[in-house]
Amino acid sequence: MVSDKKNAQKYAYEFIRDRMLDGTFEGGMKIVEERLAQDIGVSRTPIREAIRRLEQEGLIKNKHIYNPTVEDLKYLYEMRILLESFAAEKAAKSMTPEMMKELRNTIKESRSARSESIYNATQRFHDIIVNECHNPSMITILEKARTIFYLFSLKFDIYKRPLLIDEHEEIYSAIKDRNEQLAGELMAKHLYNDMNFTLAEISPEKAK
Image (cartoon, rainbow, N blue to C red; front, top):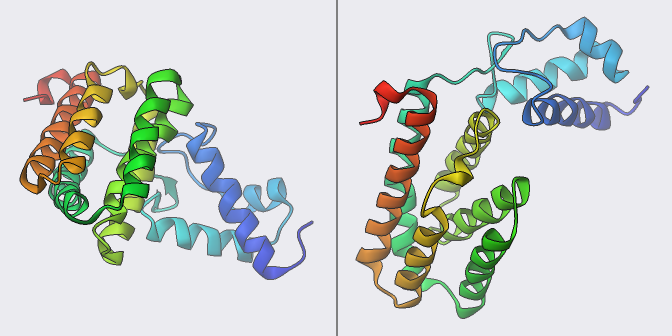
């Protein structure tokens, strides 16, 4: 039994979230507080707090694990295209040589890794660029969206998309060359290609 209130809330949150992200708790599954409290070994209060936090993050809706629709995904991609293309422009303007080296390393890792390791490397590529916007509100929005995208990625392997890492190379080169406009355009194109690939995998009639 986890006795400390703060630790119990944290443990409950991480327990539920981890099982969402490893596919144990599937989209649409109903959250039953009593059962979770027994499984985790805490009272219902930290369970409620964990659920409230996950609701704020958009991962639980009406006591059910969020099951994103195709339209949800499309809307999220449209948001990412706007925000991340802006972040890429800012990165081309102000990214330090040290962070450019980190950005380059994510590409090297992506080419040599597989499955979840590829996810981590490609996600870090985007995170490094997003952080260059230095806008806490934008960063928070995109962090929440990232988890929802990961829920989608459990259903198929987006990292098999042709030219995905090559496009990262192009974006990196534009940032390194301090070409702000090109960096933004390439990021928008990259995410648009991601969106079309994803929609074609989930619902071919939606890919346009």
